Image (cartoon, rainbow, N blue to C red; front, side):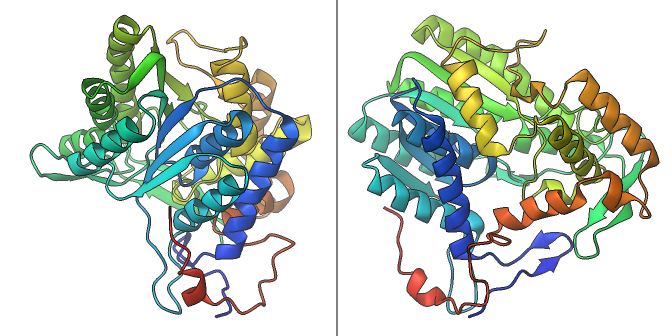
Length: 398
């Protein structure tokens, strides 16, 4: 099969396995070239197959030889034409590279929200490692079945109060298109909190604690995005913002518990804006991101996910250069929030249009990153080569 990108409504429905391998390899090479650092012995990552979760796993595994356990929901390839998800291949090839380095790892593919998955993972940790030093919560999902009542809740990307209008990016035409974000109902707000708030994170910590597998000085970190005033209507002031408030309230409650029991800490970390599988079709965000890329590259401060997570763990979590805000959130997005950077982004946002979008933003770079997380646009991958998916599908997670 010759695998070419297939974009539908700004979603890439086809991925390239060998491109995914290259994506993982390049992140590993960055860490190895940047040098080792002090870190945790064993880490559990909820959502470690892509984005900041994958970058965290790579930074820890290859930066300080951390044993990593990942829980993610992915689709494996089927037959000769269905390519599976990028996260599936990221897991496969992370394992290949980690095995070559003699690292210890484990992947569980399934519903991280369920009690069944939690029990399997906790039992594995107890038998294999005894205890963990770090839990990273980097789960992104649009639905969650609460294991206690069996009800499935769906999250929505909506505003609160008034509708929000703004430009998004059409990937196929490299142009702007107007999007309208409708106001959410009270039920939709509550459902979004159920899916994207801190409830499941707290359940993981409680089950791990009850099983006696949390080490002294245990840390747990949940990832969030705060953004700038330019993105407040869709994040801080929208349904996502309400879920993130709940996440922060959960962090405060967990912090008291792990401090008392383990001399540890529970943290919220606000990450920099990057391209993810979901962010490309969120109203306003892609245009903001394309402008941010342009400005930060000009200033020499642009970071992808691996650059940020390497700096985050080496300097802010296991080093002595932690940056926090008044709400005690850890802020590796400090370079994005630089006053000069934000001032320039705001000025460009006011004047961006279809006539100048390619000149005053880095729309090409933003979309290039989107293609890369799906395994495309790597200069050393032959995309005209026939890929035997059925043969590749024989690779199994260990």
